[in-house]
Amino acid sequence: MAFQEILMSIGGMGRFQIIHVILLSLPVFMLASHNLLQNFTAAIPKHRCRLNDSLEDGNFTGIWVKAFIPIEANGKPSSCFRYTSPQFHMFNVTSSSNTSEAEKEPCIDGWVYDDSEYSSTIINKWDLVCSNRRMRQLAQSIYMAGVLVGSIVFGGLSDKFGRRPLNIWSNLQMFVSGICAAFAPNYITYCVFRFLTGASLSGIVLNSYSLIVEWIPTEKRAFTSTATGYCYTMGQLVLVVLAYLIQDWRMLQLAASVPFFIYFLYSWWLPESCRWLVLGGKYEKAIKDLKKVARINRKTEEGEKLTIQTIKYDMQREINASRKKNYSVIDLIRTPVVRRISICISCTWFSTSFAYYGLAMDLQKFGFSIYIIQVIFGTVDIPAKFFSYFVINYVGRRVLQASALILSGAAILVNIFLPEDYHVARMVMVVFGKGCLAASFNCVFLFTGELYPTVIRQTGFGLGTMMARLGGIVAPLVQMTADYYYHLPLIIFSLCPILSGVIAAFLPETLGVPLPETIQEVERTDHEDEVTKYAEEMALKNTEYETINGKS
Image (cartoon, rainbow, N blue to C red; front, side, top):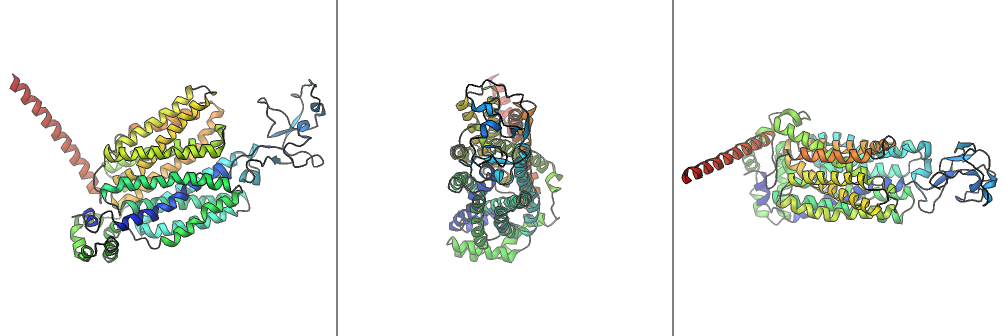
């Protein structure tokens, strides 16, 4: 009897598991807010050059604007240049004078912003426009770099020190760094605390999902993973409501961070992963937590039967294997099957995040209200994850993972061939692609936890989320390639998930398979699958041979 049977004997998916999943899923609501926060806190308001002090009245459409602000080829006032001398003839509606030759200069006196739609963002706070416009993307890349560093640091530490303490610390760090970012006096300080916020997000994601997966029976893992994914989906809609009600970027940042103090307080109640405790030799603590779970699940009698001796006996093989060495990142590539898993999972995480943030982090480019676009982008996740649940549960993880990536890439690729004025058709394809990527994200969290054994599960999660954040860092940089060829970003955003979808097809299926505890189990299971497959093929050939001989 392994841990799976022990878990079933004390209630399976009982009251404890339900409470456990709910408490660990609540922080996910606000994680979406932090991931997509800059769509609102860094929204770019309309802006123009500030006029000379004697003429500037602070009104975005003041009476002197027409004489000082050039008109661009698209018919809109320039955002980054002004005339060096006033063009008073522009007030004459019958004037046919050519102003294209008039001398212009950058906005040396600063900018005036139209606060009718975005009254307070980091853009108009620190003038991140025109020559400084790339600082906006840099802030998001720094945040993603924090998530990347967090996935590396927290992934290894939680395998060594446990999931629970790292989860507690990550919630506290998210609260403190988020509050500090809200009151940052300058751009550099803001970026530093956004980096720390990103790092803590990785800690929450990694440890929350591991604590959920490692306390849930095999047949319920798909359901709980999908339910947790829906929390992120609803979190996107929560962000829209908060952003609509709170126009000031500092207060919005504050509103997205304060709830993590509540999560920090109740995270002390959550027990450590019992699998991790047993494999780490902490038997007394494991027995104590198992009896607590049995009591909550009203299986007290079964819980009292558990002793250190029974745990050691039931999980003897896993315990012996885990004691043979200290595991590290090298174990992700040391053996052939785990190495193949690591390569395929890395590509899957990278491409899913790369294409996802390429679509989701620049909502203003669609030409509609960013509130409406964010609602559409968030809402499409609901049917996408609902559909993915059934595919995960009845068809398999591998099929969903591969098909979702390939379909998302194809949807993005179609937009290259659609004319620019086909706004609705282009939006439909982008939304469909985003839904496929949401299904891919929903699957990859569950798939990764099931593919890696307990002894290196967090390290494997760390590798996957590291690649995802690398994709999130690279995505804004790829947008800049449009300066060389207009459709190049779409080509890159489409081909990457298509190729990764093909690679994901080489992952082993985990539908209905108990969580592996050791690396040896993963290697042996794959070998046994190959032997079984070979035996089935040989049996089929023998049957065909006997049929042919019988007919002859």
